[in-house]
Image 1 (cartoon, helix red, strand yellow):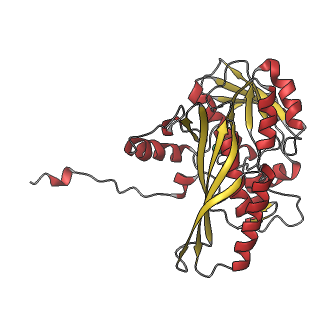
Image 2 (cartoon, rainbow, N blue to C red):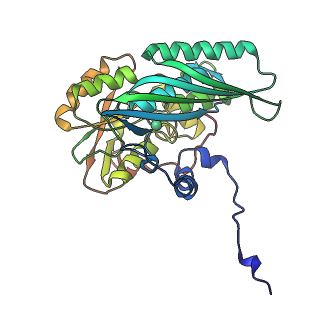
Image 3 (cartoon, rainbow, N blue to C red):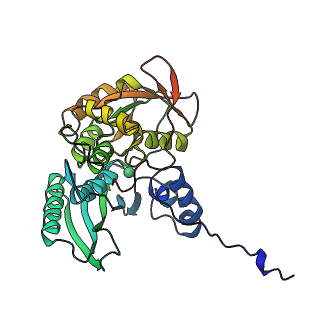
Amino acid sequence: MSNWRVVKTSDEKISLAHGAGGKAMMKLISDIFLKELKLKSAGNVGLDALDDGATISVGDKTLVLTTDSHTIKPLFFPGGDIGRLAVAGTINDLAVMGGRPLAMACAIVLEEGFPMEDLTKITQSMDATTREVGCALVTGDLKVMERGALDGAVITTTGVGVANTLVTDRGIRPGNKIIVTGTVGDHGITILAHREGIAVDVDLTSDVAPLWETIEAALKVGGITAMKDPTRGGLAAALNEMASKTGVGIVLRESDIPIAEPVRAMGEMLGIDPLQITNEGKAIIAVDARKSEEVLAAIRETKYGRKASVIGEVTKNHPGDVVLDTVIGGKRLLESPIGDPAPRIC
Ligand code: MG
């Protein structure tokens, strides 16, 4: 018997869950990217930190670098479009690391037959969003694939920022307060409802927005220990990541988590927890308890932070877990979703 048969290759294939930001994606990242990419660092925060971006040390400056692809369907939705999403997503990943956005690059892949008018609208939207934060889009690339090879458009943005105060997602300490900068679940629930055609006569709007002004206001007060934008997998995935990376627990008071009423109602109808779905204009900010009221007040003064709230705190208990004190007086574990209940929402 020959022994070549014992050499096994993997016949596993990529599934939508691998791109959903949950446990399946984290496993893929560690099994392939962290294993195969040997050079992982150009500064304090490298690839293996699995943070919102990485840092590059240049002299005494800390640059922040991040990139993100956008595959949302539909391309235009209540509250925004793929252009605003692509710019805001990258601005926010820079911002949550303390990076003031400096410049952006953009790669667009279009399907043959894509309407020129839509491309113009998307570009105008990118322009408006970059101008909100004064971050110019300075270089880009355009490719076209044959009809059917791609569904409409994929936009990838890369951003570079400079961090005077570098903030990672692993700095939370017991006693810290957890602030969320506004209502959660808006983007994911809006896209799903819109796509299912059940968003008629409902006040649902994506929260997609660039958060630099909001985050800068928080940074100016000080006391910030960690930040993250709760995108794929929502508040649940982001907080679980922060807790497990640091080995501390997080306790949330369900009644203090801001959720817009139409989002709550639509979430129930769709069977989707607003805590487990994408936000595109929100940040989680962990802050020293002594500064929390001042930081909260500063955030609430900003355009995208008016509904900010302290939703819980960091604890030494149950390390690595996120526990929800529910409105009915019980406790439940808030878990990171395995996949995303809906593909292509960001
Ligand atoms: Mg992020």
